[in-house]
Image (cartoon, rainbow, N blue to C red; front, top):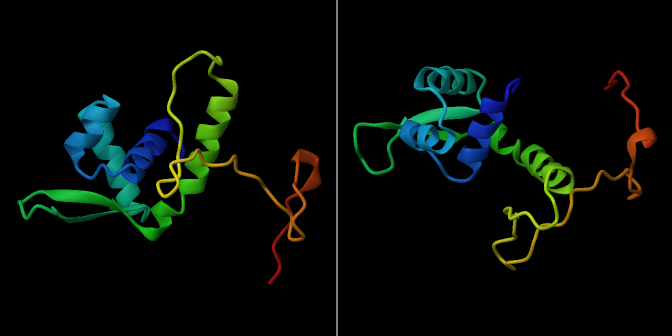
Length: 129
């Protein structure tokens, strides 16, 4: 997950893209770079290759459970970008709840007791089981 192309591929897969050509058209990335990133995502268990859904001889890339678990990561990055990279008058997209057609609320990090956590409220410790 160490480069932007990888995150953009996962973003596109979350949006429903499945074929090499769809990723290439969306991202405009060189085919050799895209092929390498897709291979790495398959090797890491984030994507898997399956027979094409239309019955053709092609293969498609679909997210695994591990890949779908990246959804909140991409939402957090999207929300950060909207808060810090766009001017108020700039046109941009927004993430909406399909069922209600309303914008998705900003992600929040909460403590076990429900408190909203900020930067200084948490620390990393070695996990014990």
